[in-house]
Each structure stands twice: as structure tokens, then as C-alpha cells.
Length: 78
Image (tube, rainbow, N blue to C red; front, top):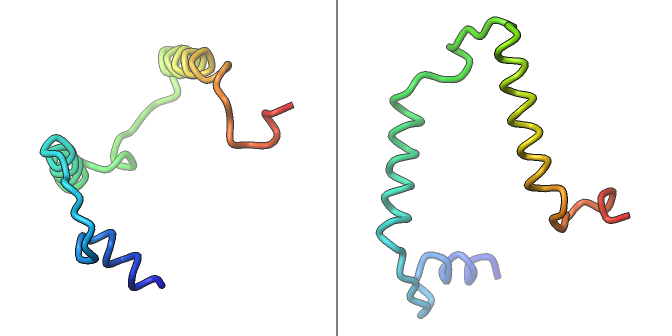
């Protein structure tokens, strides 16, 4: 069964899937960024108040966007 699924996913099982050019471009861009740019472990961030404020603002904005959305986690359904 797994072989049939893999064949269908690869387009060899009679199912022809057209991959948009924009998706291929995004995949190529992400691959290039992950191989050419330095890793996040290489950045030396000092614990300064500006980073604390920036992370707090980003987390608050994420909370506002995700607050009223349905969640897959059972804990948030009650």
C-alpha cells in the first residue's frame, strides 16, 4: 500500500499533478537560504531590553491573530 501511495505522490500512478512554478521558486529560494545563510546559532544576541520588547510585541501580535481560531489541540477547545 505504501508503494502505491508513493507512486501516486510521485505522479507515476496515473495521477498527474501539476506543480506551480511559484511553489518551485519558493522551494529553491528556501533551499538556497538554508545552505548559504549562516545558522541562527551563529548569531550572538545579547539580552537587551529592545529584544525583550520586540519579542513581547511579536508574541502579542501572534496571540491576537490566533486567539479566535480553531485549534487542533484539545486543551484549547474548552
